[in-house]
Image (tube, rainbow, N blue to C red; front, side, top):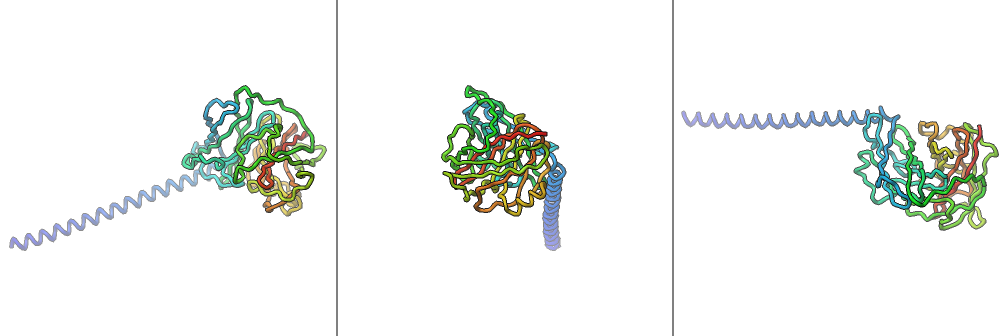
Length: 345
């Protein structure tokens, strides 16, 4: 009798143990299930939040050192947030980079075009927090405008900030120069369409000397589309083997003497279908919402080789004097152009 009771008790103990183990497993799966749902809901909420706040971008700048000195390397970190203060991390590659920074001096003679990918010290983990870093050495003291261009899945944005640079190396005074033909200097590519140094367009320190001619209407009116054509040559021979630079025939940065914004746009090759379409429809090819003094325009595709002409189609927002900076590529040389125009009402 005692043996039967003991056997029954042992069987009962085993059943209880199996049932308890089963319950633990079920409870564990339920906990994982609800955690997964919570995570998915949080992720979905973040995605929705990105879409809902796609029309807003805030850019804060951190500088190291905090006081910028002419001739000293400076680390510039741009912190991108949306309307709710959440970091913007879903940047898309546009024109071969996730973020473009244009640096222009107040005398309209110094320019730089740099990107986080240009530097070996690129911090991917920081970019997951919306922080994007570039390095730059300002060659002269004075005021500079920094234009930041980015694209998300929902929109493109162009924001700008200002920095003051201290130092004994003073920036030259602004000079009005309306010449339509100039010597243009080429600077050797640092690799992968990179040139991270500042370019002073009047210092003549480039590796090769090219010739550029700009054809523009005698009178340019604010608010009206204007067609400007550039012709390039080397040693008297037209350049027919220009190559794309950052996925465009030519990059442009247009800024007025007021230093009140930067228009970052791109050239096209005359005679191609996309150029003809743009001439008929000035709004064709736009992919972003435009701010009053900042814009970003994309025009078609770029052939593997082209030249000697490149066309700029743009609209100046208001009357004034503007400097049109250009950047394009020939072989391993990155060419920088700078032509000044006057715009009337």
